[in-house]
Length: 75
Image (cartoon, rainbow, N blue to C red):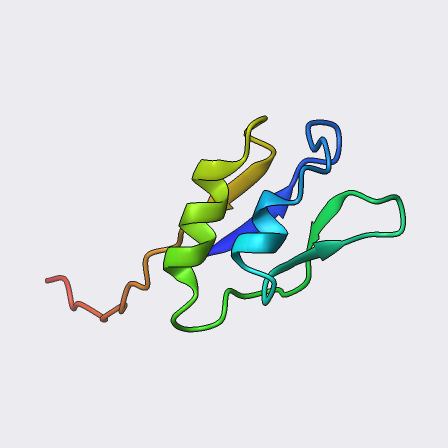
């Protein structure tokens, strides 16, 4: 899972930072930003809570399924 903050929608309420400071923090403009490239293990629930608590839906979440590829021989 990765998350991004849309700076055009962020109103700097700080909910995401209060909920999950390991992932979110303030930038130089006083808006929320994501501090990590990958969500730390065990923090997914808090990130989901932060996404849901954002009053302007400024936090964008992308989830990736880890798919194991296998080679198949076609005859």
